[in-house]
Length: 75
Image (cartoon, rainbow, N blue to C red):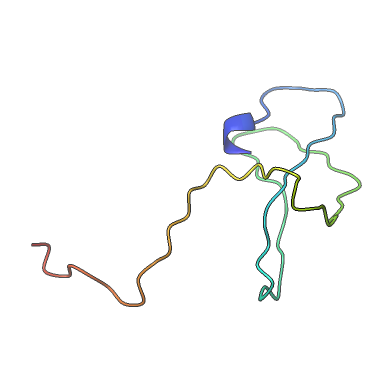
């Protein structure tokens, strides 16, 4: 939710994150990140399968990493 961060005090709201999970995945980790002072209250976390027509909210443009380090001589 990097571009949809929650700031300050807010009323209860529903927030949705939609991500593609590769079939070979064996674990899914989720949680809440609080930066600075304050409190975070969360309830009713759900993992739901949606159809492929549902757009993702992923804003990370992950590149496929090389299998081994490259340019170690910084040339």
